[in-house]
Structures are given as C-alpha cells and as structure tokens.
Image (tube, rainbow, N blue to C red):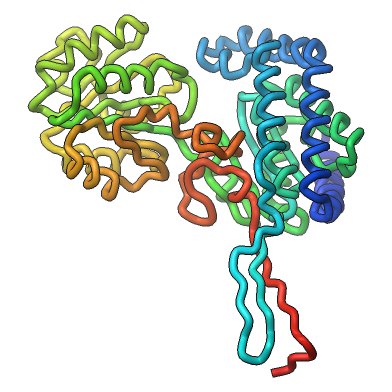
Length: 420
C-alpha cells in the first residue's frame, strides 16, 4: 500500500470515528448493554472463524521463532474465546459511568452547575501481540461511549481483523453505530505516524507494547497519550517476611503467567534472611523451570545461578527468567525499585506493618502491594471488568484503566436568565 493510500484510509477512518462518537454519546446504558450482549453472542457464534484466523498468526509466529511465552500470548482457542465473550457480558453488567454527576452546586446568582461524566470521544489504541486486546479495548470504549480506532501488531493481524469485524457486525444487529469499532487493516509503521498526527479526529491515544513503540508514539502524538510502559515488577522479601508466604507469593507472581506485564521480574531479599530463604526459593522456582540470575551476594549463596548484569535490573523478561538481588535494608530495596522499576506494580512481603506502610508510601508505582501477588494488578481483579491497560502515567489515569478512566467530564450549567 502506498503512503498516499495509508493517509487517505486512516483519515477516512478518523472522520467516520468522529461521527460514530457523536452517535455513541446519545446511547442509553440499556442500549449499550444490549449491544454488548449481541457482541458476546457474535464471538461465540464465530468461534471457528476466529480460531482459523488465529491459526494463521500462530503459524507465522512459529516460523519467525517467537518464544513460547509470546506464542501463548497470541493464542486463541474455544476456551479463551468463551472467556472473551464472558468478559464482554461482565462489562455489560457494570454500572455505566456516563451521566454520573460528580459535583453539583448552586451559585448565589441562581446559576446551577453540574459536573457530569461524559465520553472522551475517539480513542486510538496501538498494541502488540495479544489479540484479546482488540475485544477489551472495543468493549470498554463502547461501554464508556467512545468510538475506537485500533492498530494491532503484525503478529496478530489475521486474528485482529476477524475479531474487530465480528464485534462491529455483531453489535450493529443491536444498534451499534457504523464505524464505532475500526481496525487499521495494515501494519506499516507509517500508519502509527499518521494516526498519531490525527488530532482533528482522535482525542486520546493509548499505546500498549514495548518501550520502543511507546516512545515512538509519544514523540509523534499531537493529542494526549496515556502510556503503558514496561512491567518491571519487583517483590521485596523483608526480614520480617513469613517464609512460606514469601515462596507462595513470589512463585505465583513469576510463574502463573510469565509473559504478561504484571509478572515478577526482579526479586529483592533482605540480607538477614537471604541465606536461609534463597535455597528454598531457588528450589521452588526451578521446579517451574525458571532461570535465575543473581547479584554477587546471591551467587555466594547460590553459586550455580547465572551472574546478573546491570542490564538485568532494568529488563522486562516476559519469560521464565528471574533476577535476584540481596539488599541491605528496606530503604535499599525502595531505592532499587524507584531507580530500576517501571512504576507499574511492586510488592513487599512482610509481617511488619510499619515496614509495609513505609514501602507503600515510598515506592513510586501505580500499584503497590503488601503480601499480594503482582499478578493481581489487573482491572478485572480490581472489579473494573476488562481493562484497557495499566497506566504508568500519573495524569489522567494511573494503574488499571477501566470504564471511569475512559471518560472525561463537562460542566452543565443552567439558570433563569442569569447574566451576572
């Protein structure tokens, strides 16, 4: 496809999305919920078609030599599609944020002011690998009254095309406006630049993927960007940690699903318990086939681990690899996290309430956990339903982004001929 054709296609999508956004803003909560249930039915009714498209992406991924974790992120089957459909129905059951009155006051001159939650408008989402993001993004944007322009990665292009088509056509049966859900049908890098420059049509852009993608979008975007940076997540085992809990939580955080952004990547452990606990931890991780990389103090206790490099402390492995560092103190752990972390999710394991409170107040991350696996940093686990991502920004949203985070607000003012 030529550069001119890319520009023409995406600008037409932007214009269509803007018109769809106006129509979506007028839908009632009941109408949106009916559309969502129709979309869930469409996913179930097109399972074979979606799986067939996904098999093309899986075959390409295997040919390219993608690792097992990345291929697993890409895979769709009947079980996962049922989970997607159930997730759509769950979003339908959630309260509609649009129309919520956030504040209300009457001024001395009789002017009545309401601050009301409203859709953002048109949201563009750029993402890689995971085709379930196509559904999550479209569904959450619909429920919050927003039109969506999606740009997925080349790894899942066949899956994404079919999923977006199924969601749009399935929703139209129940009244979904045309062009409410659009997927850019090609993966040329130029499409990212064109989309990022379309501030006339796009109100917000959300990149989900590697640091390179996000930095590219930030450098090009002419509209606000909410960033979903790396998940370099830490678990710190304090000197007051319960050993059994420390093993249980750490192993879950690393191995329950290693290829996701809230998986544990670096384990920190207090020097006073390192000698007694590291051999137990190492045995538990090795049972799960995790490669361990350690600092010099870790190597003194576990001489057979791989020596960690400076690069390891700032790497999101998304694989069965874990870096381990012995720290001198709670303060040392906090400094390490704030320096090397990605401000995503970090956890302390401790029976010391004071130490836990210091950790929670001092670590500058979107989610800070005490005795909880980082794998629970998730919109569904927080009760938000499906999430659009986990923002590592501080404005306008931080942490798991659900329906409320996909809205803005407006002031609705009324009076009786008020002029001053």
